[in-house]
Amino acid sequence: MEKSRSSFSGKIGFVMAAAGSAVGLGNIWRFPYLAAKYGGGMFLLVYIIIAVTFGFTLMTAEIALGRKTGLSVIGAYKKLNKKYAFIGWLSALVPVLIFSYYCVIGGWILKYFAVSASNNVREATNDTFFTNFISQIGEPIFWFALFLALTSLIVLLGVQKGIERASKVIMPALIVLSVIITIFVVTREGALEGVLYYITPNLKDFNANTVLAAMGQLFYSMSLAMGIMVTYGSYMKRSVDLEKSVKQIEIFDIAIAFVAGLMIVPSVFIFSGGDTAALSAGPSLMFITMPKVFNEMWMGGFVSALFFLLVFFAALTSAVSLMETVVSIISDKLKIGRNTICVIVFVFSLIIGIPCSLGFGAWDFVNIMGMTILDFFDFISNNILMPIVAFLTCIFVGYVIKPKTLIDEVKLSSKFKREKLFTIVIKYVAPFCILAILATSILDVLGVLHL
Ligand code: PHE
Image 1: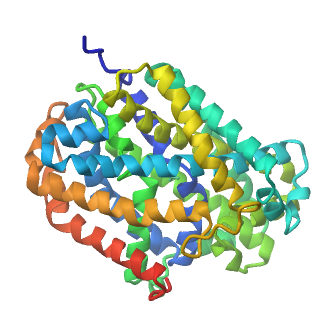
Image 2: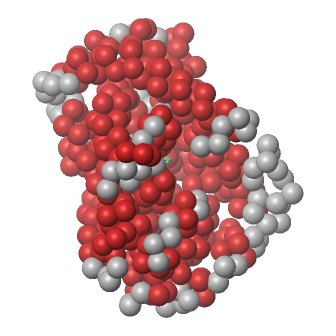
Image 3: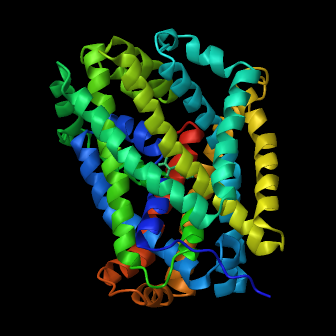
């Protein structure tokens, strides 16, 4: 007997869960430094334009694919055209690759939360604190396992009782925390200059790289091309307005990214006396610079704890969506219970995540194309697999099953206001843009381009 598929209870449940997936490390840590690097307000403007055209189209396509077929990513492509099942397989690889290392980073965040909450943020201001921590064997693995266990617990509880319920608490909490921290930061002395630096459009910095960087960021930030939105779409009821839901997820995602910039850019500005070099420091921005910034602030330990709690919430709901995607793929394929699958995915991710964690210390001799194990997984999934999957999805929807198949699905729940835009973008615009992203990633790693 066919078991009936789980579903989100309604629109709010769906939007909160999907926004929970979209809002993650990408919004809080990556967006602010990209915006600071690529022209401030100009980057924001470009990002918004791309989000409501390109992002809207791809997200609508993925959710509609899931809802139409009622299947997770492998089954979804196969059901619509057997010959193209391989796109589903390729997409399934992405969350499998990302999940473990995402939880390793989640573990680092938990550690920083614990350090801040126990009022020891001063310890973390030492330049070597971060590298000392991640190069150990036991401690980072402990925090990684804890983060993974928390994620698994939510997934184990199921779509409505676990994911939806957790998202409905975490997402509003995330907004409240963001507002509190932002108000605190922008009212510090000297913050205004940083705010202006962040939001003033700088035409000089506007070029093709800005657009490509914004597009790459959008993909990651909206959790596209990794099977997540297809899976969540398969849990969406036909009565829920799909177009409006996508709009709300986008607003959520953009708003949190923007606000994260308002917290981080002015803080760094005040701390460094206007020197913006620290903003583009990659991972060390969050784990090395931010503790120093907090340490200098009034009530710094408390603000730091709130900040890492915010980052933890954001990362947790993203990790949940990754794990659910993997679980649903297995559950569609094999006739085994959800609990067993969760245990299998937990153990498997533990086994994959440990080398990622060790790659910063005991196993730092493992070097793939000049990258640590974690960076290599990140590179393969984000820079290579995701653009390929997104490109193939556009071709699949635009030319194989034809946009009308999904447009009809959207229209089951409402009018489709942006129907024309959807068709044009998926057939003619997105495939070329995505190829450009793929080409730049490849040239970049070959050392031809230095973006
Ligand atoms: N969208 C998330 C972010 O912006 C990233 C993410 C990656 C989510 C992988 C799920 C899976 O950080």
